[in-house]
Amino acid sequence: MESNNNVKKRRGFLPIETNMFDRIFIGLIIHIAINLLWMRFLEQWIPLYVATLLGLSIIFIIVKWGG
Image (cartoon, rainbow, N blue to C red):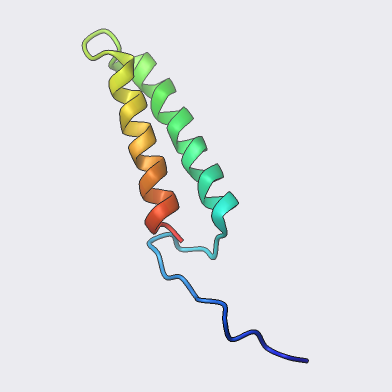
């Protein structure tokens, strides 16, 4: 059995081992949760597009540095 030494181990801030799909999925779930909570509690004062921008930036952070 040969071991593949070309695979780089990534160390991110997520406490589990993830691949790209896992990080995108986690980011989307968090994005949906932020939007739902925003609509429930903050939309009266702050528009929803602010939550969308916040959610997209969180997805980017998780995919880039999460895993």
